[in-house]
Image (cartoon, rainbow over all chains, first blue to last red):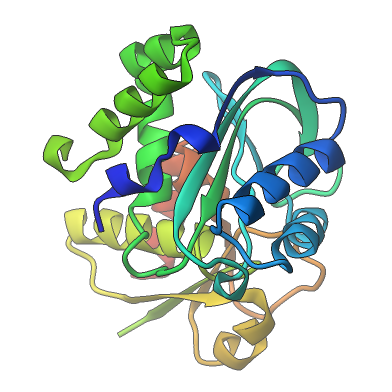
Length: 158
Length: 91
């Protein structure tokens, strides 16, 4: 699987202003549903999954969330990228009391776990790469962002 | 061969990623072990036959086998420390 194919201009939000996790999942699920990426069950599944097994991740250089859910709720694989205008608190993975002010969200549409196994490591790697992070933070145009992400995550670049 | 089990909520993304990272780390260190990713619901079935449990979720119960912090292998924060613990456990 070429990870470049997972990105779509319609699945990118830049400088988007949300006030809660619920609002984020509501909007993202609706877009994914309209575009045929997910089943109707996706919205409730991803909300439930996030509350049971939170996906916030913080390192010295990044604060992100990587929400995802079981393959049965996904019709075709994707990555939804949302750069938030103001941070939204997510619980850190593996905790029930450590909140992370998340700046960027990567919703992972996993359909073929064995083919997509490198994806999460690649996201981590890229976001800890200074040059990538700088460009990612700067790009304010959806089309430009998708081109940039495809280039960086595509197999040609591997 | 010793067996390492990695579990996350659905077994589709995080545990797979951590398992693959752990495999790579062990290969580099020339340590042979069987590393497997499972979802948290199946954990009980695997834990009896495993030597080390790498956890990514909040532990609601204690297991009889040594447990390591899997998030270190995901983010790279504290990975040296967890790797050393793993190597010691697999000796």
